[in-house]
Amino acid sequence: MNQTEIIKLCRLVKALCPSQVFDEFSPDAWGLILSGYRYEDAKSAVATIASAPLEPGRSRYIEPGHVIGGILRIRRARLDAF
Image (cartoon, rainbow, N blue to C red; front, side):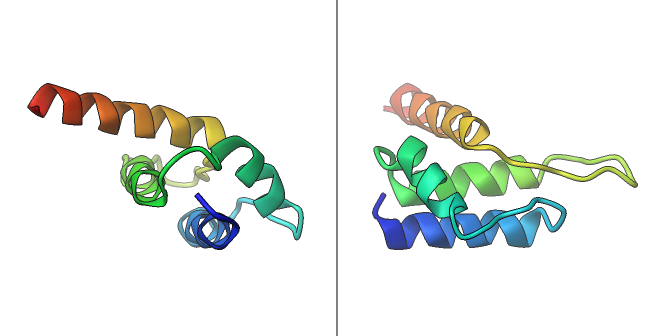
């Protein structure tokens, strides 16, 4: 992922997780962890994570490690389908 895609991913996470705090340094930190992954896979992983049921009154937080776990599940599913 490039820096523009990292910023888009952070904006998506913030939109889906309004309680999650991001600052001007967050994209740099997320990019440090996620730069080796495809944006499309990360976006799909975030969508899957955010669509999981959530108890009323609870807030959702998505970390880079959650995104990596989702990406690995996506890749595993692709390999299984192949």
